[in-house]
Length: 349
Image (cartoon, one colour):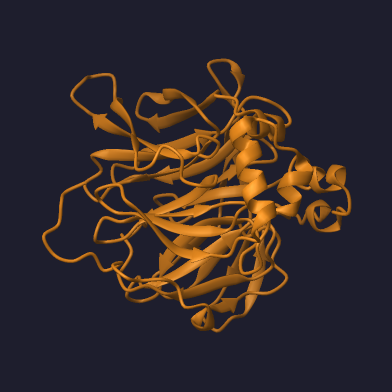
């Protein structure tokens, strides 16, 4: 990232808990949130689609059918808790396609889907190189209409890969040459983002726990390649990273899932703590056990905060892109607050 001579807008900034508001109600696993220019929000919905939240707060489920297994599954035991995240449909990462429809990385059915705004859904990809694609996590469309897709692991259930720090995640791209792997060997690949110039792609390695970046090389005839792989920022972020988003200054905002913290990495890679909603010792114990490769479903279940439990994605929205919305895996509402700096605009249609 380019160095700035002006002060960083995040200097001295922390999120004021008293200023946090919420929107939406009875949401089911609102992991990823897309914000439209008119204030409409679209939240991933574990029933098999998305929930549309209008600017006035009214909401509507959009999908072909409502699968209520996520909501009805008990969470009293570790087995019940794990089942909520390993069975059925689980829309996870989302992006708008060029026509304003939804690209959905389905973490439950292990495929990349395309859903129209009326709920009609079809599978775009469920295999790569002749093999099942694996645990699809996140999808991103860039300014050249390429689709970037992350796969966290091919291990089933995925909780085993997360607990033992399996390093089999990969990043694929869909372009004029089709679907192909462009980088692999990641620790549970999660969200990815491109910088403002689309020169570097930043890759979350949840069990790394760190962020890797790679340079886009478009000089060849075979399509984009990724080079110059390096860890950006600390090699251990203090918790498992999940969602990332750039602001217009060049800070990379990042959620730490399960320990429920919101941090930012400056353009120089320095870590800033913006919001700490962790629950203390259970969260610290989980981080240590994930580092050791001994974490269990019980450890994950105990470590959760209260504002956005299992804080996942983050999205800049609002008319000036200064409203930050927090997605989560266990929440039923979407917390939001005001940022001192606008977010980097996402690619719309």
